[in-house]
Length: 293
Image 1 (cartoon, helix red, strand yellow):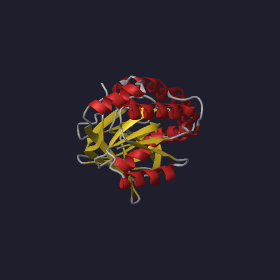
Image 2 (cartoon, helix red, strand yellow):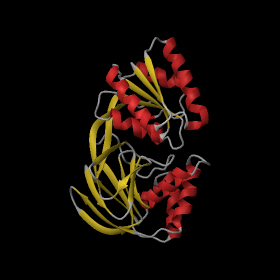
Image 3 (cartoon, one colour):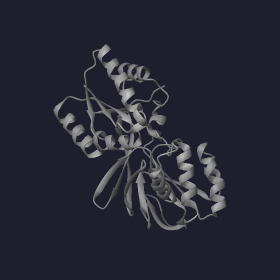
Image 4 (tube, helix red, strand yellow):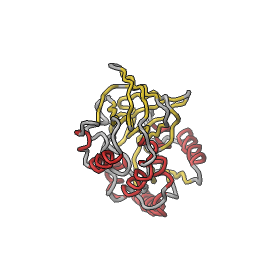
């Protein structure tokens, strides 16, 4: 049984059109499916939970953007249910990473029908007795500020939205004092931002940690030492091709887990998590999906 979950607000009707085409494919190929189509995140969550309880669901197909993916991750990580994305959102970074962005409904349907799923790493951030799964990026500091502003921007979409949010955030931002602890070292330092990556990209294709992998059982952490606003503006465009990591003010670390503390907020895959401190840990092979080729 496939569970098709839609965010009607994603893509200004594009999600509904893609879902309708996907349902037609299911019917043509005698694939059993049920639909979750609710008008709020909370009711969507409840209906997914009920569907997973009441039916033998082996695949969840999400029609939406990163917000819907984040919601679905909380319910399928560390379970046998496989997750696929038919992207209709703004960032679509997970869809970009697994190769479903730019694919038609029939291409996605045919691939998951005829290819075995695989297990990839997911990560969990814990703060104040709550835990949140994420698959791409945990952002804090300047990045968290940009994320907050970007979430409030309705137009334009994609990379342009994050560029505008960056400019709006930049001119009032000051470096933050961080405490970072890994399984190998502890650091106390001022930084513009600290991000932890399980996947390569966020913000509509910004390759913040281009060498990060879903399949190595390791998290990658990046921080930017204090720089002038003009220097930060010169570093930013390089994020789209990943060459920013060669800048002398950009530093990286690797570990299975991190503890991060500072006077700032954390966002996981674009969704607000909590104020710091947070603990972040990778869980190898905890998410079942497909990598489209």
